[in-house]
Image (tube, rainbow, N blue to C red):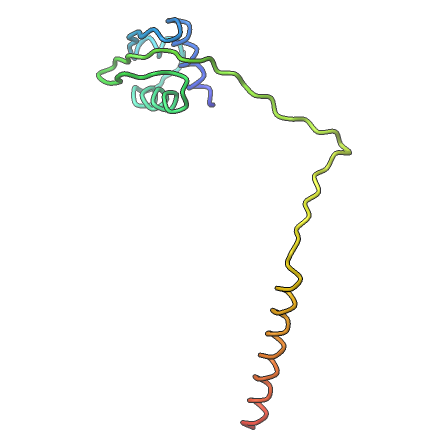
Length: 120
């Protein structure tokens, strides 16, 4: 989640209880973000938060947003591996398929060489 979405979610979570709808204006979001951001970016961020299940968005338009917080954002830590832990990927190929592909390739090559010699 990017910083704009996180800040917008923090503003919504601080303004209302979970599941309670509130109406926030563009200006309130701009004050909370402390940056120059347009209404389209705020609207897109709210729609993305709604798709991810963080908020419920009833409407977004005319500089007003009717939202209800649903859950908090919890950043999941990335798993850490020790230096000696390495992933080993073993790719198994079908030996029968490889055998028949090589056999077919050899036969095709022999036929092509035979045709070239026959033509010359």
